[in-house]
Image 1: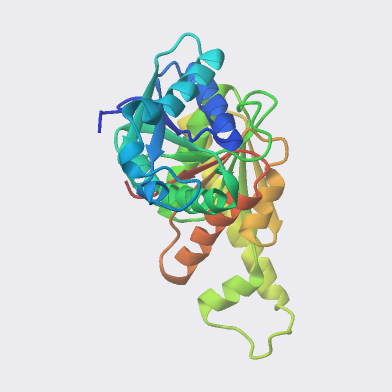
Image 2: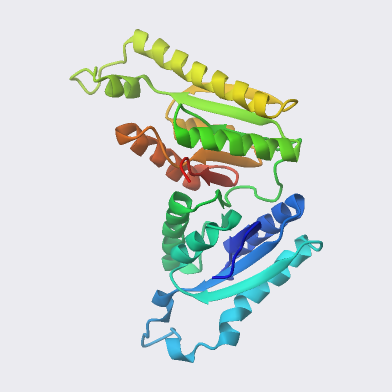
Length: 301
């Protein structure tokens, strides 16, 4: 595959959601003053012959393959007339192709829905696969994507004490600083989770958490959030940083903070083991619940 070094890469399949992703990617590329590549992938599954409505593999011409990517480029140039925008159309598996493209890209951008019910399910699996395995941050366009981060659209970052959250913090802080946006550092706490992690959990499912665990959970979350905010301010002097610590499941707490935000940023790796699975579920849930575009950043690249 042609190198995409220094570029933003956006997946485009002709659907409405993909068109919104192209609009967002083009505006972001214009803001960063970096080139944009619009990729259309012809998945092998789509080429499987069927009695009705599916074009056989051998009848698909190079012209047909490139047409959708070219349409995406035309749309992108309406929003980014001063940057280089190029099409790339290839055969392959969608997620694999976008993950491969991420190795040399600054950012990969995806929509949340494909063409039709089956495509919607497939694109959901694509967004999860790419956000988990991409070698650069992945943005999945959700909610109100008409405005990028800026003075009136803060950047929200979910934190804990994991390497994934550390990477997400620095990515979010840099984005907020570049866009002149406020950075909101968010952490959720749930006393039941602390009991599980420490191996001290009551035998009755409906028992109330001990008040001591509630206070310990909140104190731990406040410390993580304060430390993260301090690091963001140190990395970007002058950046406005606010802290939010709320009781509740982390995904719900972060989702609530995304109201009128320009971007939500989370890590894709947790502290390992059980807690790692929980943090992974946070990023996955946000891809379905956030009220703004979501950027997933890998902790170990």
